[in-house]
Image 1 (cartoon, rainbow, N blue to C red):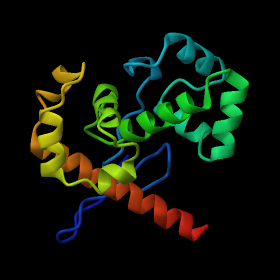
Image 2 (image 1 turned 180 degrees about the vertical axis):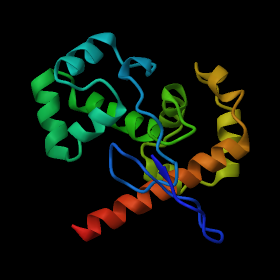
Image 3 (image 1 turned 60 degrees about the vertical axis):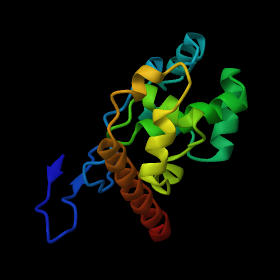
Image 4 (image 1 turned 120 degrees about the vertical axis):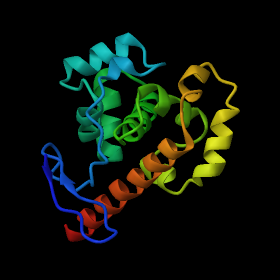
Length: 168
């Protein structure tokens, strides 16, 4: 990854070698699917047999609804679970999010980087701090500034992807 000199108030940009996107350092390292709470190991193994073992390869395999439907059909994994895993992968690709934090956000109703980008950091932080779910230990060490940074990164990723689609 190449660091580009920061200009004014604009964030310094980095080009991710895997996706070719300028991400301002906002893309996380791909997360292995077995790290996500709630994804059955049998699903992980079936996906791995198809060459899909982490967030990056899952996202690439499910870029369209048709691809998601085809993956569900070819793996026997219900389409709803494919969409759930897609949402978790979309969230976990954001720097500062991990597999467990993505799961907590999913349970809180955040299903995409786009939804996270539009979230109010203070309100979401307050909601997560009162989260009654099984992943409370993930939320306790979360700081509001970390969440704010992840929301900023989600916005950068979504904006760049939108621009890329418009150029095609």
